[in-house]
Image 1 (cartoon, rainbow, N blue to C red):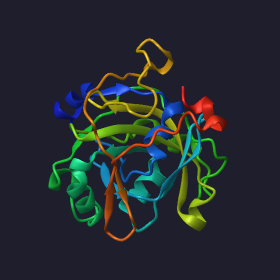
Image 2: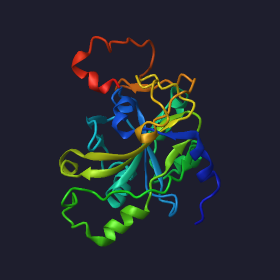
Image 3: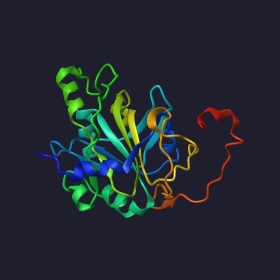
Image 4: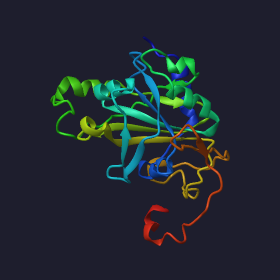
Length: 250
């Protein structure tokens, strides 16, 4: 099925962001949206996730995500070995909750909640690095071809703060804990976002194409674990005091 123009037009809303700074998007603990599958074959799905964590800053940048067989996304992730983590702003909280209330097995959540799937830019994706798949099957060339062609979409729209493109790095904990170790391969931020995470002095020509300059204060949402949420508020700047971690402050 041919992709629609809308699947490409919203790309210009997002600007490249350095992967070694992805912790500044995820370490605060926002509720995220996870996309899997592919626009090209209409298998693309979107889900809400609160169970995630940073594991490693760089070389490579690693993220842990809990996605189990109760999620349709589990099968997509197992089959393709890739996903996108999108960080929604507080304005999307109602849709984020509604997306988490239903399954892609019975609902086309993209249409139902007016979310915009965006075809990711063409770029080579690295293969997985774990020696065996979680189910014990060898990866094989057929599996590798599928991984490289079934691209998970980004999430478009003015209220998406960032998109983080990932491939599966390690499945060793999936069988026991449904914990996927994901390797970040590319990231983008909303061009309107005021990058208030310590990198406002980043220049366009610097490595990885980090971009700042947006004026919009976009607030993350954090789940308290019982249906209540907290929205970003007052920031306390302790960079001068955190002398042990100065290398992560630019």
